[in-house]
Amino acid sequence: MAVSLLAQEEQSRQLKETKVEPPRFNKPMEEEKVEVIKPSPICYYMQEELEYPEVAGGYYNEGIVGVEFTVEPDGSLSAFMVTNPVSPELDQAVISCLRETNGMWIPGKVNGQYMAMQKVVYVKFDIPGNPSHAEMATHFYKSGTDLYHRALAWTEENSLHAQRKAKRGFNRTLNTLAQALKYSPDEPSVIFWQAATYDQQGNEAMKNQKIEKYLEIINTTGYERVPEEELELAVVIKGK
Image (cartoon, rainbow, N blue to C red):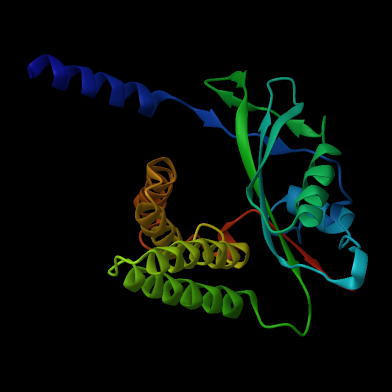
């Protein structure tokens, strides 16, 4: 036990002495604009460069797209991954815009050495006149939990008809909860019910994935999601 405690203390000391500098977006900007950049230069850049994607048929999605990518030691970008999808058109627009910033980054450092580091950027696509994103997230969250409890009630019956109803109900639950996350990324209450639904479906892999995500969020921020003002969040408004 004494050896274990000494090892933990040494590891803790090394972590405290580790100096980490995250990657920074470094595109030159007009001096008068620098003071009004919120919340970060990369988000300001994306707000300037991104236009609301045109969609065939005139139907426009909205929500908050999250994209994770890696800033390599030479400042190049790689490994783009959509962490909070909204629609193929909006997701791809964000990735395309980020790809154009290749070479505009100062890579992150660990103890003075350039290292590959992950970065996450969010873009909020908003359509004026529609209900707020908070209202939409609440609507889909409540609808999803209602669907879950209805499906759960069907599992108490042994008939084939009831089991089919339950299966369809849990699938609808997952689809509806996914809609809630479009408007409120990493909302822990939504992720909790996703885990519960996968548990009812017997999907252990997805259940465990959602539980890990849920625990990661509440261990970092408590039982609340990260407020929008604390995200690296660009805002793109339809028609502007």
